[in-house]
Amino acid sequence: MQSSISLSLSSPSPITARSNCGVDSYSPHLFFNNTTTPNQLRFCGLRRDAFSGCKSSSSNNAIRFNQLPPTNKVFASLSGNGTPSKGFDYDLVIIGAGVGGHGAALHAVEKGLKTAIIEGDVVGGTCVNRGCVPSKALLAVSGRMRELQNEPHMKSFGLQVAAAGYDRQGVADHAQSLATKIRNNLTNSMKALGVDILTGFGAVVGPQKVKYGKVGGTETIITAKDIIIATGSVPFVPKGVEVDGSGYIGLEFSDVYTALGSEVTFVEALDQLMPGFDPEIGKLAQRVLINPRKIDFHTGVFATKITPAKDGKPVMIELIDAKTKEPKDTLEVGIGVDAALIATGRAPFTEGLGLKSVNVQTQRGFIPVDERMRVPHLYCIGDANGKMMLAHAASAQGISVVEQVSGKDHVLNHLSIPAACFTHPEISMVGLTEPQAREKAEKEGFEISIAKTSFKANTKALAENEGEGIAKMIYRPDNGEILGVHIFGMHAADLIHEASNAIALGTRIQDIKYAVHAHPTLSEVIDELFKSAKVVGCVSSVTPEAVAV
Image (cartoon, rainbow, N blue to C red; front, top):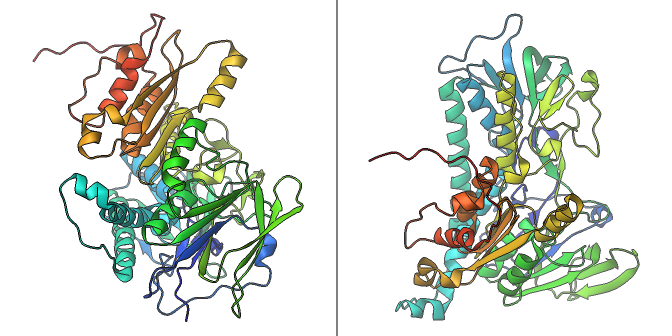
């Protein structure tokens, strides 16, 4: 039997679709059989008709990072959970216990609200159980493998390392163990604070009314002063690829599998790889993450059909032009192809939620909300509203909603929410790309400037022999406003938060440039970025009073 790694983005049943995850907002079902790594892995954006007549299969030898069987158990509160408003069972009911629902629930209890959360699958949703959490375990493995396999890199430290290898089952166990640990942490944190965890499929049945229970079985109706929809999203395979196949998902999994010895092919609908990134960062990332690795790519095309290898014939991938829809090429990719990863994005999970009972109409499946996450009679956070399909964005939106429910107005600045791609090296970003900033500047009548720093000038990066990378900032020279920051380099995902917090707090460059950074640390890359900016205006943000020590 041919060895394989099978990765799919097939849609789970409605009950399994509880998540608020994103950069990671994806849920490839990962199968690791006890065999050798495949030689080739194809990453394609497929049209829906490529799957006609196909049925899912499973293997008894597979380790699945998948949903656990749902139960009807209702977890009792372990501590006080507030007193509900008069006439209601709860102050707040949250449908969906992914990262977004979890963040909202914890903040609600902190505010003294009696809170329940309804989960149809398992706590943590897609992000924790099938997406960004287990994938980070795989990326941790690939990072270490890549370093150990880089003989010149190891010799530069004076280290000699024998041939590196890995145990497939051990890798799978690491990812499964991490997902289980994080899921238990989330569950226990809610139970400890007294959040009522109600298990079953949740739906709105009218203003301030929710039902939950097993589909086709007994259902319970509860009332709540406020309701939050946090049901997340499900895998999406469009008829024509609208979301790139070389975005976060494709890049991260190409990093994993090339490190483990696989060959990868990208099939990208848009005219360039990594279209969602700042163009300058994207070009550098392509030079480092794609060109020197065993990765082939085709841009401006859809993959319409894959014919598996059979009787000695190679795998055939039929491509059409993304714009004209005319046949363009047929790839013969050899008989060693083991899997296709469909990395075409996600669709909101909003079917069957009873939205019509409160006169809510979806738009392309998304629940349209205002800047305060409101729709008539309820709130919606996370992937289901489509504003920013990232796990931490969902959590931030949930906290913002709880602030409003508690009587304090709050509007989340989505331009301050960072994103990251956990490749080696990493990519991170916050705010506007350079083209977006230039468009905004032209429309509103102001100038922009660009500041850049290199990891090659950073002592800590050089000590690690990781000098490849840059940090880039787009800003207004007239007032020091930070419009966007983009980083490619070692630990970029950790470094971005100083910039994102500056944007969130309205801190100007002329103030933050005086902040002190420990030496030698990677944080000095950002320190030098701020210091290199040239601000001509005198506008300053509020500076706290000095404290004598």
